[in-house]
Image (tube, rainbow, N blue to C red; front, side, top):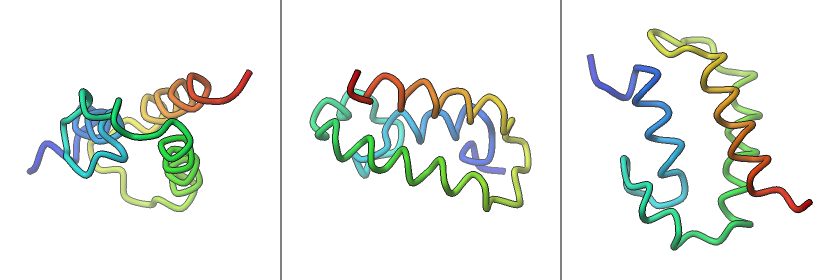
Length: 75
């Protein structure tokens, strides 16, 4: 089973979201905050439709996405 189907793999994907490079959180700085926020909001909507979570802890992922969105959202 690929690491992408684990909680840690999903979190790594989210850390690099917008870079087109899995496991590339350093490249996130090159992505505009507005674009990254849009992608994270889309991912959050997709969570509602996701059926197969396999070995991914949904609550952990939802919490991480919320944290990332809150960090990028204008105050």
